[in-house]
Length: 416
Image (cartoon, rainbow, N blue to C red; front, side):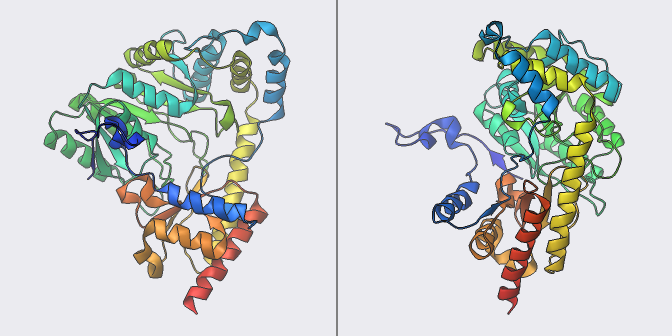
């Protein structure tokens, strides 16, 4: 387990950003080493296939862009917007949850628009945590799940996230670790952050496990935050469950939904926090001091995206499914038996045995140098991510096959 907390004695006068207490408590940004070398090679004219950052390459569907363009030229939309989001967008989000998940939300009190899920999670931690509060975070995890707690002056109690051969979370292991953390940590933990389908591991969760997690949080008096960024990205015909479908979930928890991946709107920065009224209103209040909301035509276009036909979401999911198959086929052909993802837009790959000694950062740098392929080191997602690398499926199928072929050649050179 990892205990992440700010250092107590900052240097004076400060010499770097790390000398400020909350920043000094952040985990090392291990992606920086690979990114710096990537930039050097690109500057030198090398053809680098970048599968590191999960930055979608697919364009936003035309009907959503058209809606933005139709309103962007109107001067009335150029004024400050509403920090909590315009009513029409909050209403569209509530309608989406009603239609998709059978969940009733009050758009006035149980929905707030965020500038992406990442911003929303960070500001929610500022609203919920006091200095020294502890939050339980399964590892590996999307880094903001750690960083947001540290920014707010809290401590992260990390627990291992374990999956089975079918790509599901081992529920007994997860919940037992949460219970153990509650019994062994003082002061008792205040919140639990979950995210399924999971980035980076691609692990999925059953409705039954979410129900058990809700019951545990009610019993242990834990707030529950569920990051649902990959709500639409399951490749096995079964929609990932929403936390809010669990009876009683809104008594203890909120869920973050993002437009970034499902609607290919990553740069638009539109997300939502929905669920427990007190938690949503806490985030709404703190945001009212910090921002004036998103450019209004973007919000209007986002509302249109949620209300319009959802065929584009299925088409995007199918693109990522085919891309996963293309890269997996190439990696398997190289003698690297990587398990297929159940969901998300990533492949989570155990490092081949003969390279384990390099560690995930060393192996990522090896792939960059020998194959010209960028991947994310697993340790960047938490200590339990060591021994893995993550591929982001952000290139067309042909380019992914080329990446696999390059990696195969590099692995064969090593074997020889």
